[in-house]
Figure: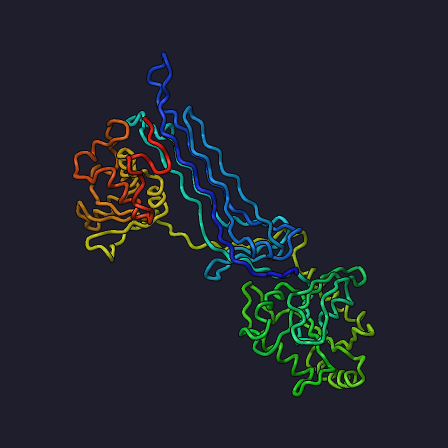
Length: 491
């Protein structure tokens, strides 16, 4: 059985960047070949794009995990790794993208509108790109960054020109069926319609779409019935039509009270888009006048409703009486709305990015570690992720980068003492100011750094285990014979 899904939560993972390669050219009769390690490829992005062939969000309901391709690692002979291909995901027209907190990220309307939901990680630089005057043959390369991983919520808001609203069994689905070629399910019991039905209507030279919203009842804006789930589908409508059942036998029900109850729910509903439902024009369709008692009631209340400012139409979906007048009134309201829009406007995509701090980094006192400090900033945190902490030369290069950025000066200004615990990202280390603003690059053997050899350091194997523990990874990385797990020892 087909299902209509207009809300889905996706677990999105962009591709990881490939690691850079640390390689030195070795060729007979060509001494001092120099570093030739290539860069890693960038990870692929996850891109949401409006596709006219996609209608509900059903596919995402069954397959919520989306992952883009990883970048390939760099290789020797200056061969760069291939970039991971971007993953383009087709979404229906009118899809709204929200984050976990319900904040709007993008509003995708119009074929071709797209939004990068998750950006792939950058590829690491190879040692050929890291060579300098003082470090002619770096014995290290930068690691690739991990791609963004996040949960996003997709909500579908039907792109219809006219929205039919009213109580259950008021005749909204019947009205869609007689005005268009749509064939919705119709029955005489509450909540027959469990999903919005969309139909295309032609009135003269005007072609427009009509959608019926599943039955609204008092308390719908607070979650009663089905209204809260489907109220979002009227946000994009140009005109709203109250469909009123004049033949209902329920006590306490009459056209005026039904309209007032629905308007109350619309006023209480807070749309996620920058729209105001109160500004949308209204039409009133007094339905089921093929029943004699219903016709009498409709003629009795029509004058009062017109006096209140409503355009009222007496209609019957059974005999088609009054439907032409109603259809042309809908077309007139839709045409008026279209004239107020910019002509030839491009596909609309609304993006509201989070505010970005103008400073490159900040240093704060660590509330958990006495005498410790925490460094925040996109650059320092990215550099931490790129560093191979099992390589002393890579650690020294990280220290040079942080010093050039001004982290050491900021720590000293805040009173940091040598040996103070400094946390950047998921790594905590003991601060040892060793260079003057990072201007000194100390020549040393490949894979080593002379500055680190003069301090009491944790052995490389233990540092590797500590770093894995801080990142939440298993501490054991080697087999019982000292070979990497899953691989045989190379001799």
